[in-house]
Image 1 (cartoon, rainbow, N blue to C red):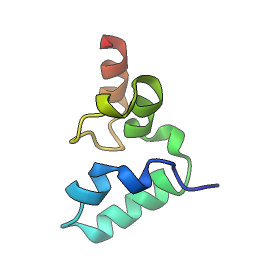
Image 2: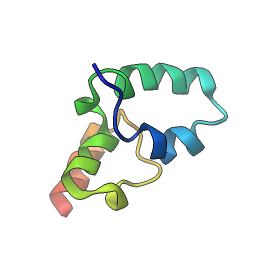
Image 3: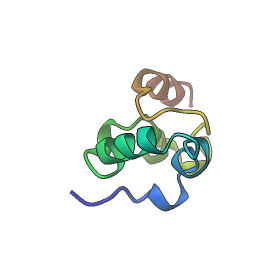
Image 4: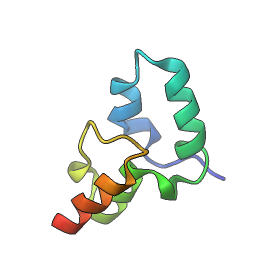
Length: 72
């Protein structure tokens, strides 16, 4: 599977996870280099655009992503 198109500009991994490299690497393997359709950040990005993705939205927060998309 190809890498997620958002990796280069994903502020979550490039800024928020800078102090947790092992956790970030594990999450990147699962969500960015695997099936990104389950990534909450990617869900919001695809549905509403990059500007609507909250900077603190964790890839694991699918429920929060669904609420964001419902409110849009």
